[in-house]
Length: 418
Ligand SMILES: *Cc1c(COP(=O)(O)O)cnc(C)c1O
Image (cartoon, rainbow, N blue to C red; front, side):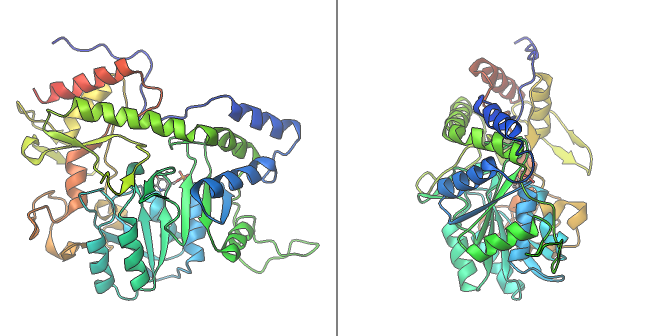
């Protein structure tokens, strides 16, 4: 087969998809001169977010990261406090713990949803009994095992912060992600399922907490005729212009999810005879929002691949492939793929932090860099995060990708295994 011709315009991993209403709400903000961090768009974003997800309160903020920072403060994390965190996630999940001087302890992932392993979380509480806060992310729009994790948190009297930045619209046993945390967070960053170009929302049922976050995010001004300050403040409020974009996107959330579901299903069908599988979930418990379609290469079909801190090498082998080779093939088509989010316990910045697998202290038991090098009692790699990172990748998942373009991408992936 001849080499495919690259796309004339790039197919992105996940880019903003606009519809027109966004511009109307932005224009209203402009024409009424509500161009700051107050206005109808902000009020509407808060109403839409809390009603859609099903929480009592929503606070619109400048980013998901800002919302996570407010959540960490509300949870009362103080310097030196250990916080049990999802390990395979975007760094923005855990960095806010550091902003408050907390110490992230990384909890390994499971192979059913690629999210925090409840068994490993149990172990983490055993090894770090003083931990009182858990930070849980739903990777790529697939809900974690929310009920089990909530139960374990309750057993230990721990506060659960839920990072639903990637998973708006996904449900677990019928409940929206964003309803499981004491404090939950959604992001409207440009690549998320709906976007404001930036922005985020903090969700909670605790009215006092919402009021505090609102105050802290607007420089902690006290009720006084002058600027009066009793607490540290932040400039974290959402702009009414950005809120106009988010407001215009909300009616299109279901449509975006349907498009992403179709993209995922199309890949899933097309790869059914290849030695790969798609990012997994349990149909009987959850409905993802399918934000990103990912694949993972079967262990037996992995070509040799080695990753340093900044570069990767692989040895091509007939009938086998690896993420590095597949990502090169996707890139050659002028499309954007990406490795699986590199787990936090493998990141140089967090190399001194504890890492807990389902069998206990992951740092002591395995050289985490050798994916699959240590096998647990259940026959699976001990370090699930390193293993999924080694074998997995994110496929182009843009709403605006045409079926013929997806077919070209599928063909390019298939050729890697020839
Ligand atoms: C995008 C993202 C964030 C951060 O959201 P921003 O709005 O970009 O600050 C946090 N956590 C996860 C898992 C994300 O994907």
